Length: 97
Image (tube, rainbow, N blue to C red; front, side):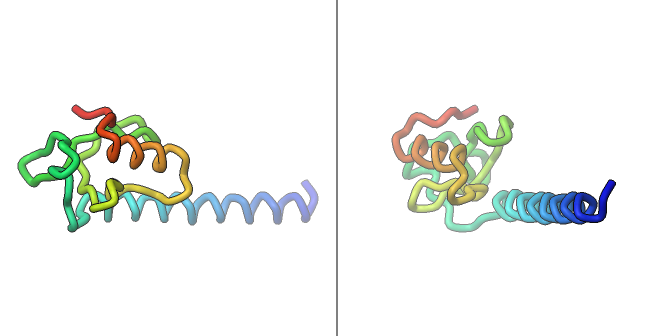
């Protein structure tokens, strides 16, 4: 394997690692997000008033806070699944459990 290819692969691996760490941090922070407006969007909630939604991006059940813009705490701007999820929350058609 040439040095140039090795360098490119190393850079891409580091980039993927940083992205993974950022996503993991966002997910963890999202679970403990404060400004919860889930009731304003008629979403089913848990005992801590977090919305019970099914995440499109990761295809899993999540209990998350929802802000005044209808964005779940795990929302990531410019991600198509997250944008669609936030739109569905605002329109009242998000999948819940």
